[in-house]
Length: 448
Image 1 (cartoon, rainbow, N blue to C red):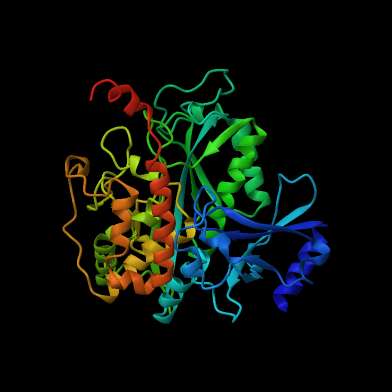
Image 2: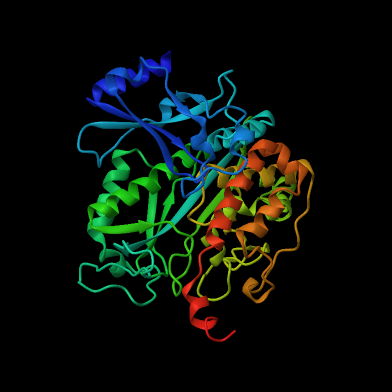
């Protein structure tokens, strides 16, 4: 009731006339409906549970009917008052609220990715631990592209010229897109997003936005909102923003790096550090869990057929294996140079195209299992990890095999959830596999 009263006051104070009732789908996109503000608190909100079982193309998985255990019935929605935000790009006063999904008997819906993350966090809570994360989101600005057969290209900046050279950390290159960036920060402030720094990445018109560290669920909600918001700002400037993992052949991929640490819920100390300021046993076990279990959950970090184009040598600038190292950006798991109270691990595997709830849940699940099973990591890697073997999967199909091979992971995420996720992603893979590429026509048509 207190939550409803809080929402009621917010609707009135902001003179909101309609509310976007949002649910993250399996891909991480927003599904839902518009509800007039006057009816929002009076109605029993529902949506078909089938929206949680759709592919990125809008199709339904082959296991859809069997796994839902209903004839596409309704699921119950509960608004999370902490996620209420105004929508700055709307033509009239509009609000948005992310909703939790429940079955008709009141249980968290097993196919809700937000529910999956909340379950992983509950395991930490039982152990009196509080995970803290900080995501880094990379994305590209590109010219409008209405023809899928045409390659993407960077948009014109203020100078009237597109970027063609590497401009890592360039202030002047960033200022080329100052109107977009100014609106992005204004929209972000209006939506209460904890955006910290922005840098120009090494790709043409590629940027990275860092979020202030905090609660994993809250930051998953913020990343979910941020991606949608950035696309809207780009459209306002007659360009596109894309979070594809590898949108252009000759440009680096885009990542969603996740910094993570653990605080004691009792005294607030960072358990990755000992009293003497060394890295703790919990730190090394958590790190060992990441190394051991990431091969099983890599499809949560690389969820689309395009994701695996990131994992390659050369221009991609992405990790290719699971080595870890101190302040070593060539490794998949980096330990930033920090004071003991800020000891943390940076997971560099996830792409920008991830579902934020699943990617955060997956990295926390791996660390959790590492501590529970007391898994030791390998020795820290001190050289250039790009010179080592590429050990990550190269296709979505290969990655999905690992998801079904570990009983610990299956238990944490739920057997039915993993079965549905696998079914959805295999359907996407098979649909993609039916497309004949220009490379095949160029080199195979008359030569084989």
